[in-house]
Image (cartoon, rainbow, N blue to C red; front, top):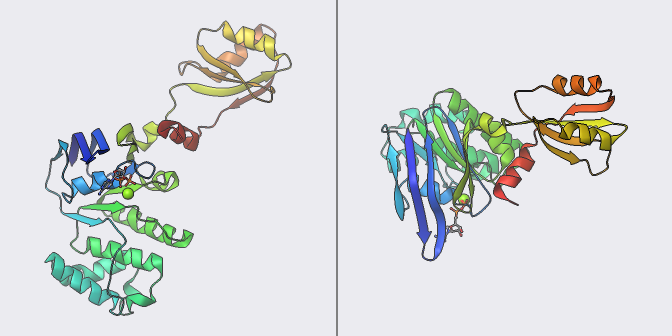
Length: 289
Ligand SMILES: Nc1ncnc2c1ncn2[C@@H]1O[C@H](COP(=O)(O)OP(=O)(O)O)[C@@H](O)[C@H]1O
Ligand SMILES: [Mg+2]
């Protein structure tokens, strides 16, 4: 759908983006993930042409109809949701035929006649999404869509995004929340101070390049010595409380290979466990915080 190449942006002396490269395909939920100030909103602004890049290109491979919600939505408080969406349609110069469809998707159809001032924050945010999709876009761009919402509001907005994705809308969303991105995205770009530190599918982010296990015996020093002799064991670290070793070894070997070998040379194991992948620790390492 689009390719970003060598995209850079400076605000005066502040460098917000440094030579970004990534590409987004149709039907992805693509997340820009990174801490505050890492350049997410700047990137979205350039995609939407509200900001001008200092260098680099955005190439659209197909012409997309775009809907966007970049900031807190702003509505006439004393008008109903429906009347607000009518105004949105006039501003966007789009037909009013999709208003009911949009209200239904965001779950506000039953409350459409109520004045917006009676709405909760979560409902206002969902009305913002309704306004963004009232032109039936095939690409929806959202900047921090759940910011400031309570857990229920967050869950409702997330459900709306999932529903739109299931209906064939491609999504680009910026978020500083790993948990949100984890629950929604298929692909992501992790930004750190305006540079890409990871780009690809969510699965490839969590895919380990080595096996990681915990392994222990009554004589850890002897165990460590024997493991060091194995060329497919890359890393051996003593657990801080000394109860076991954490080791990394080649993906073309299995846990059984190691335990069988140790059994054969007479070492009895008292602890053997796969180390679960720690997504949060991995993310924090990537953004170095
Ligand atoms: N209008 C602006 N003028 C000057 N600096 C800006 C402006 N907008 C953003 N920045 C700076 O650019 C960097 C990236 O900001 P931004 O894209 O808003 O990050 P994010 O959305 O990831 O929080 C930050 O250092 C921010 O202070
Ligand atoms: Mg931002």
